[in-house]
Length: 286
Image 1 (cartoon, rainbow, N blue to C red):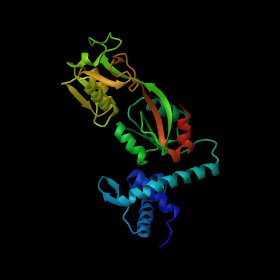
Image 2: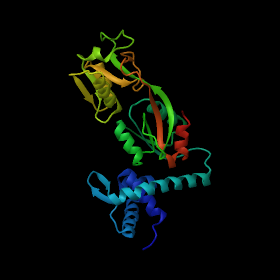
Image 3: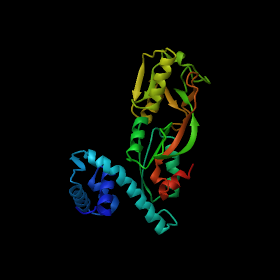
Image 4: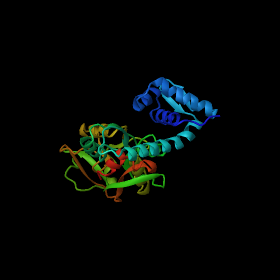
């Protein structure tokens, strides 16, 4: 049984990240047939199937997940070696996969990074807290920007800011002149919160139970953009972390008595990717 080549490992790692042979080939600058052949040879060497081919993309098998955990680390170290050897004086190309739980503070950081390094391709998505935790753990992304992440030796985290939960209302709402509010005052209001798996929903339900409060009208939204639009359209009162959406004069926000703790926003990256030049440059923005 022959040893796997670096090309096989790189092709597999990229295909596993992208969940697509064609996208992996595009990023690596090779043909799709080259990627599929490298993966097939790797599967033959291992005597195990690494992917399940489906219409909606590739899915890692158990053997594939176990190999990806090592292969992605290898790919990151390989990239770092090439960077050190080349000693780039500037970032001319590259690809960053970034996810966050809210538009801010991620988007201002991405905008500044794009101004400084316009040739770096950025894929950005919003995920809830649970999905972000899994995306970093499974190395599906290079960077995650989110609140109160689970930190351990497998990740590097840089603090961005401390934030608190606020109530958001439209400027013409009866509460618009308030400087703070109690959750007990909101029991008859329609409360708009983010989807299942979010830190916001977890915090809201835990606090409500702690204080024996019951809310009959709760509306769950899938994205922050929809939450913001729902508030602006008068659907109800939003519960969000301060500074999580772009400021507008049409919305007013203020803190909540029962949720008085501070939460911390971090940039989180897999430990072995911390010193990769594009990621290091992104971290330096903070």
